Length: 271
Image 1: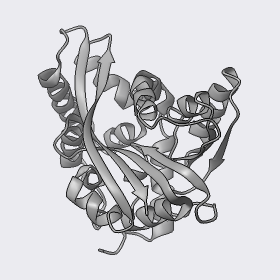
Image 2: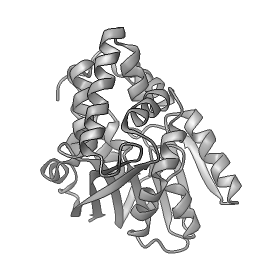
Image 3: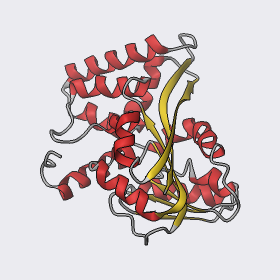
């Protein structure tokens, strides 16, 4: 693959800062229903050893622990982990949350029965390393379950709008490639049996599309950082483009934004 820009360590510091910016918890709590559906489809049994890679504020960890699984959540963003711990404590759920990197999981081979990552590991800069690590820590017969935004879905197209204003660093593969069945087969198919299905996450916000854009600009780290790199005219243009995208896809009304966002659900059984 192409060489990573500015050195790997510096790149990872920038990615960590991006995800720690804003307050992703404000976004995550509005999407928690989709994470619950994602976990429900795994039919977890009590005692199942689960690792959630790039767990954020615990959207997948919480329902997995409710099902009786033994859950560990890992993320690079310490502020998100702190929110996750508070959420687990509020429900009296025993979940271990640790700071860690999807490209260097701190666990021995075959440690887990199920390894999950929903809209998380897809953003790590070296997908081939991520794929290898997910497979390594999952036992033979165990499952890797991913939820990845598709290139042609609502979020994928939104990312492309943003990238047209602030291009990503050169040499980085697009995270959206994890939402392409052919690419996933290339990355995971050799050592797993794959089942893939396109699903939809429902964004349902009780306010206008322009307010949704403002919400993401305030709380979603990547959006906040993108706006920060633009001058005033650029910020206005990007806000208008994003508002138009939400408005065009809105199935609600002018004061109630309802959008269906496609993602690829990957169930990979390790062989």
